[in-house]
Length: 344
Ligand SMILES: NC(=O)C1=CN([C@@H]2O[C@H](COP(=O)(O)OP(=O)(O)OC[C@H]3O[C@@H](n4cnc5c(N)ncnc54)[C@H](OP(=O)(O)O)[C@@H]3O)[C@@H](O)[C@H]2O)C=CC1
Ligand SMILES: O=C1CO[C@H](CO)[C@@H](O)[C@@H]1O
Image (cartoon, rainbow, N blue to C red):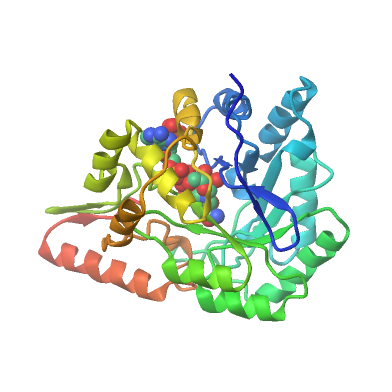
C-alpha cells in the first residue's frame, strides 16, 4: 500500500512545506536507531525532516537521507529539510549555515531558522556555549536583524529556500519582520493543547507566515515541576477530551493531538524513534474532528509552557518573562511548603 500523501502548505514565496514533519530531537538515542527511524519515516510517507545543530545529528541524518535517495525511491527534491542556527552561532551565522549544508550533505536547505531568541557566546574550539558562574549561558546581544542579513544572503544565493525563526515572542517577531528585506516565512514554536498559541498564530497569519508546532504531544515525559504534594506534568496524551475522542474515532491519543493541530492550519513535527509510533503519527489523514470538538479544544484553559529555556533566564532578549516569573513563584511556594525539585 502506498503511504498517505501529506498535504502541503504554500509559503509566502511559493515554496511548498509539508504539513506534517518528522522531529529529530532525540538526545540519548543510539545512532543506529535514529538512522533506521529516518528510513521508517520516509517509507511511511514523511517528506519533511526537522533538525538543528543542537541535536548533534545532522551528519547522521544526512547519511540516512542520502542512502535512502540512493535506493531510487525518492529524490532530494521530494524531501523538505530544515535546520537551525545554534544559539551560540549568531556571531558567525555563515559558518553554521555552511556546516549544516556540509553535515546534511546537501546543496541547499529547504528552511533555515534562528533556533533560540537568546543568543549566546561560543566556547572557542568547542560546540557549546560559554557558561556564566550561575550556570546560565553568557549573553551575546547581536540584534536578530544582523543574523538575518546573513540568512538573506544565503537565501538570495539559493542555498536556503525559505527562512524561519523559532522561539521569538510576538514583539520580537514583528520587529524582525518589519526590518527584514526577505520576510520570515515560518515560525516554529511550542504549541499543543496546553499552549495553543492563539495570539501568535493570528500574528503569523497577519504576516503571511506559516506556523509549525513543536512538542505537539507535550514532549512526553517532560515533567515541568515536582514538589512534595504536587507534580505538575503537562501530558496532553492523557487529557480526558483526548482520551474520549480517541475512543470515539478508534484513533490513539497522539493521533487526536496531531489531527487537532493540523485542523487549525498549523503544521507539526512530532518526534518518535519507535517504528510503530512513526507510522501511527502520520496516520491522521483519514478522519476529521468536528467543529464542536475543535471548539472543545479551544475551551481548554490549562496552560503549561514546557520549554522555558532556563539556561538563559536572565538574557535581555528572554521572550517569555511572565511565564518564567510564574514558574519561579510556583517553585518558591512549593519550597516554602515542603520539599521541591525542578526536573526539567
Ligand atoms: N525549535 C525548537 O526550539 C524546538 C524544536 N523541536 C522540534 O520538534 C520536535 C517535536 O518535539 P519533541 O520535544 O520531540 O516532542 P513531541 O511532542 O514530539 O514528543 C516526543 C515524545 O513523544 C513520544 N511519542 C511519539 N509518538 C508517540 C505516540 N504516538 N504515542 C506516545 N508517545 C509518543 C516520543 O517517544 P519515542 O521517540 O520513544 O517513540 C518522545 O518521547 C523535536 O523532535 C524537534 O525536531 C522541539 C523542541 C524545541
Ligand atoms: O529544539 C530543541 C529541542 O529540545 C531541546 C531541549 O531538550 C531544546 O534546547 C531545543 O530548543
